[in-house]
Image (cartoon, rainbow, N blue to C red):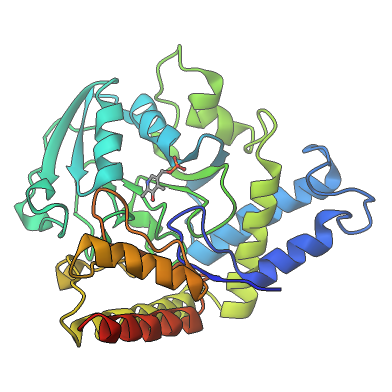
Length: 360
Ligand SMILES: *Cc1c(COP(=O)(O)O)cnc(C)c1O
């Protein structure tokens, strides 16, 4: 076996014990004679899997009883539409634009009503998060939308805005990386392919009182209430993603010991990389220190040619998928939950070597 250190932003690295358990279950799950991928979603085995996955998510995130969980196909991008469709009762909502995905979310929401861009860090190429104290809230906003960790630019919110309207947050690239207080949000959603499972599903965690406000002509599968009322079984749910998510949650509970420990590991890993970046002058890290993401670390070499050479050389050492997004350039190391500390240490060793070889 020759597994590499995979710094992909998504789909991304999964915990090895999760892959190994999935491999063992692949041909026959328990004594069912079938794979999870083959079994009816109405079977006893699968009903237990989906119930267990939701129960684990509720435990790990300490989700209060008045929040519902929905497993939904279509990724986080479909949530950019489902949020306004289900929640924009007043015909308008506030959006913070702090990166690419929050911009896309705002653009999609414009199809459903008035979008107030109340904050933006576009003028500084999204290298910081605006201070909540400086951001107004529109009196008639149905909700306030943020993207809590900006996957492409490598920033994250360090404090949540205190809003009158429900806070709706895209946590695709930071979910399960640290404890959160679910009661601060109206809706949390995330695509699972960054930190949780293979691609193919989003999860929405919705405060109960926000359900049931979609227009009457809303397609059944775009209405949170339809999905929640059917326990995510209105139609065939993405069974493989749900099963894999259950395994990842089991890994967090039983091997990591919960989100407080997960956060500690993530802080240690990110510190290895950021401490190195701060100790030298060959590489530049564009993000303002206070807003540095624990999950996506962006940096550049002195020239575009050196960026390309860096990535090529890294791949030869088994450090793959480290090229930055085209909007930022340079490099991006995504160091999600499943990236071991040894992967980050290996990356820093390579960075030191590359800098020394190139006049750093
Ligand atoms: C990856 C990502 C998305 C897009 O997710 P899809 O599942 O591809 O639709 C949206 N928001 C954030 C923060 C992301 O990281």
